[in-house]
Length: 250
Image 1 (cartoon, rainbow, N blue to C red):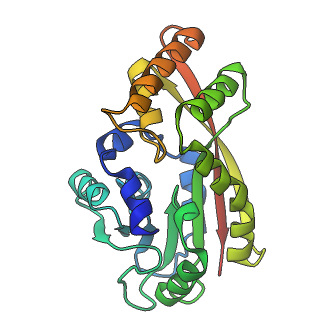
Image 2 (cartoon, rainbow, N blue to C red):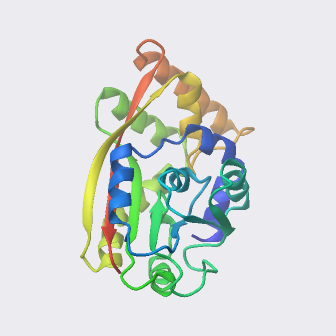
Image 3 (cartoon, one colour):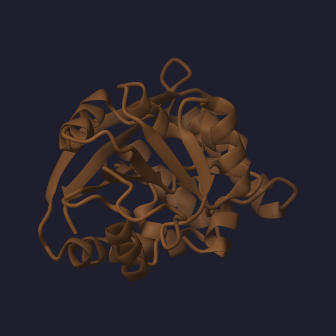
């Protein structure tokens, strides 16, 4: 992840930690299954953010190192979790010793990497045969009328949303190239039940979302409030995800 991309989350650390979904337990179980057992080396979470995936895996007793380029995210991760070892670094330059990682996990972060340089760095720090496991909570944009309307609202409200769609379109080719086509993939259902404040927070946690004090921010808040009013049931909307987990050796 480049420094400029890392800085796209500046000012969003608290809302990111508050609003982003956990990974479903079935996905965490499968990630744990993919981790080599005959090793006591740590698992390294690259692009750890505020430590959401790091903490979920650490709760299983796995020794964890979290690597994160954004200093604000890193501070939040350290505040929330004293069990893992959080360090500033990037996918392309982790600062870790050769052969020091049992496995690498990347939660909601691979799409930001310089894939070629990250692959070189991962091979350097991985123990022999160690896997790379990628995970995303991917919104289901056409699940129902609410999700279709939400997708349209994002496109209309945020100038930089189109860049996210371009990254998504390129992702499949990048994953295939990264693993040279040799990987295993599983999908898991996930969802968040969101009141109006949680719904706004979830949206504002995204890299493309405007920050307070801008006209784009104020217009987006009004659009989110209207959308929630239209589709809420007993004060909540259900935001659905397909959690994608990819596993392989590079």
